Image (cartoon, rainbow, N blue to C red):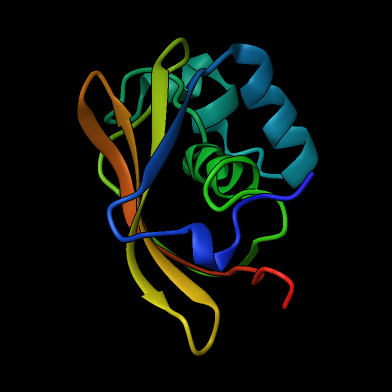
Amino acid sequence: MPGLFLEDLSVGQSAELVRTVAETDIVAFADVTGDTNPVHLDADYAATTPFGERIAHGMLSAGYISAVLGTSLPGPGAVYLSQSLAFKRPVKIGAEVTARVTVTAIDEARARVTLATACLVGGKTVVDGEAVVMVPRKAA
Protein backbone atom coordinates (compact mmCIF):
# COMPACT_ATOMS: atom_id res chain seq x y z
CA MET A 1 0.00 0.00 0.00
CA PRO A 2 2.10 2.88 -1.27
CA GLY A 3 1.78 6.39 0.02
CA LEU A 4 2.20 9.53 -1.99
CA PHE A 5 5.19 9.92 -4.26
CA LEU A 6 7.40 13.00 -4.38
CA GLU A 7 5.67 14.05 -7.59
CA ASP A 8 2.27 13.95 -5.84
CA LEU A 9 3.24 16.51 -3.20
CA SER A 10 2.88 20.28 -3.18
CA VAL A 11 3.68 23.05 -0.73
CA GLY A 12 0.67 23.72 1.48
CA GLN A 13 -0.67 20.17 1.34
CA SER A 14 -1.67 18.97 4.81
CA ALA A 15 -3.13 16.04 6.70
CA GLU A 16 -4.16 15.35 10.27
CA LEU A 17 -5.44 12.76 12.67
CA VAL A 18 -7.29 13.03 15.94
CA ARG A 19 -6.70 10.82 18.97
CA THR A 20 -8.04 10.93 22.51
CA VAL A 21 -5.36 10.20 25.12
CA ALA A 22 -6.52 7.34 27.31
CA GLU A 23 -5.12 6.06 30.59
CA THR A 24 -4.22 2.83 28.80
CA ASP A 25 -2.21 4.78 26.18
CA ILE A 26 -0.04 6.36 28.87
CA VAL A 27 0.55 3.06 30.65
CA ALA A 28 1.34 1.28 27.37
CA PHE A 29 3.72 4.07 26.31
CA ALA A 30 5.53 3.80 29.66
CA ASP A 31 5.75 0.01 29.28
CA VAL A 32 7.08 0.17 25.71
CA THR A 33 9.59 2.98 26.26
CA GLY A 34 10.56 2.44 29.89
CA ASP A 35 9.71 6.08 30.67
CA THR A 36 8.11 5.60 34.07
CA ASN A 37 8.41 9.22 35.22
CA PRO A 38 5.82 9.48 38.03
CA VAL A 39 4.35 12.67 36.55
CA HIS A 40 2.79 10.34 33.98
CA LEU A 41 1.86 7.38 36.19
CA ASP A 42 1.44 8.42 39.84
CA ALA A 43 -1.52 10.66 40.66
CA ASP A 44 -0.24 11.51 44.16
CA TYR A 45 3.16 12.55 42.84
CA ALA A 46 1.67 14.44 39.87
CA ALA A 47 -0.55 16.42 42.25
CA THR A 48 2.63 17.97 43.73
CA THR A 49 3.86 19.21 40.33
CA PRO A 50 2.95 22.47 38.59
CA PHE A 51 0.52 20.45 36.44
CA GLY A 52 -1.51 19.33 39.47
CA GLU A 53 -2.38 16.03 37.82
CA ARG A 54 -0.95 13.30 35.63
CA ILE A 55 0.02 14.28 32.10
CA ALA A 56 0.81 12.31 28.98
CA HIS A 57 4.37 11.79 27.81
CA GLY A 58 5.34 14.52 25.36
CA MET A 59 6.68 11.89 23.02
CA LEU A 60 3.25 10.26 22.88
CA SER A 61 1.99 13.39 21.13
CA ALA A 62 5.10 13.33 18.93
CA GLY A 63 4.15 9.77 18.04
CA TYR A 64 0.85 11.05 16.65
CA ILE A 65 2.86 13.26 14.28
CA SER A 66 4.81 10.20 13.20
CA ALA A 67 1.52 8.40 12.56
CA VAL A 68 0.34 11.13 10.17
CA LEU A 69 3.66 11.07 8.31
CA GLY A 70 3.71 7.28 8.07
CA THR A 71 0.09 6.71 7.11
CA SER A 72 -1.22 9.83 5.33
CA LEU A 73 1.23 12.51 4.26
CA PRO A 74 3.43 11.39 2.63
CA GLY A 75 2.35 7.98 3.94
CA PRO A 76 3.78 4.47 3.51
CA GLY A 77 7.24 4.51 1.96
CA ALA A 78 8.30 7.80 3.54
CA VAL A 79 11.40 7.65 5.73
CA TYR A 80 11.76 10.00 8.72
CA LEU A 81 15.10 11.83 8.60
CA SER A 82 14.69 14.45 11.33
CA GLN A 83 12.18 16.05 13.66
CA SER A 84 12.45 19.13 15.86
CA LEU A 85 9.95 19.45 18.69
CA ALA A 86 8.94 22.17 21.12
CA PHE A 87 6.59 21.16 23.93
CA LYS A 88 4.31 24.12 24.70
CA ARG A 89 1.60 22.81 27.04
CA PRO A 90 0.84 19.60 28.93
CA VAL A 91 -1.57 17.03 27.53
CA LYS A 92 -3.96 15.60 30.10
CA ILE A 93 -5.65 12.22 30.20
CA GLY A 94 -8.84 12.41 28.14
CA ALA A 95 -7.58 15.24 25.92
CA GLU A 96 -8.39 15.10 22.23
CA VAL A 97 -5.14 15.69 20.34
CA THR A 98 -5.12 16.78 16.71
CA ALA A 99 -1.80 16.04 14.99
CA ARG A 100 -1.28 18.05 11.81
CA VAL A 101 1.49 18.11 9.21
CA THR A 102 1.85 20.61 6.36
CA VAL A 103 4.32 20.52 3.49
CA THR A 104 6.49 23.65 3.60
CA ALA A 105 9.27 22.77 1.15
CA ILE A 106 10.15 20.13 -1.43
CA ASP A 107 13.73 19.35 -2.41
CA GLU A 108 13.21 17.50 -5.69
CA ALA A 109 16.92 16.86 -6.27
CA ARG A 110 17.29 15.00 -2.96
CA ALA A 111 13.70 13.60 -2.74
CA ARG A 112 13.20 15.27 0.63
CA VAL A 113 10.17 17.05 1.97
CA THR A 114 10.05 19.47 4.90
CA LEU A 115 6.82 19.66 6.89
CA ALA A 116 5.58 21.89 9.68
CA THR A 117 4.32 19.63 12.45
CA ALA A 118 1.97 20.40 15.32
CA CYS A 119 -0.31 18.87 17.90
CA LEU A 120 -3.25 20.85 19.21
CA VAL A 121 -5.65 20.41 22.11
CA GLY A 122 -8.73 22.62 22.15
CA GLY A 123 -7.25 24.70 19.34
CA LYS A 124 -4.09 25.46 21.35
CA THR A 125 -0.69 24.22 20.26
CA VAL A 126 0.79 21.67 22.67
CA VAL A 127 3.69 20.56 20.44
CA ASP A 128 5.18 22.11 17.34
CA GLY A 129 8.17 21.50 15.18
CA GLU A 130 9.48 20.57 11.78
CA ALA A 131 10.07 17.21 10.12
CA VAL A 132 12.15 16.21 7.13
CA VAL A 133 11.27 12.99 5.33
CA MET A 134 12.64 11.17 2.33
CA VAL A 135 9.88 10.34 -0.14
CA PRO A 136 9.96 7.76 -2.93
CA ARG A 137 9.73 8.90 -6.54
CA LYS A 138 7.38 7.37 -9.12
CA ALA A 139 9.03 4.64 -11.16
CA ALA A 140 10.61 5.91 -14.36
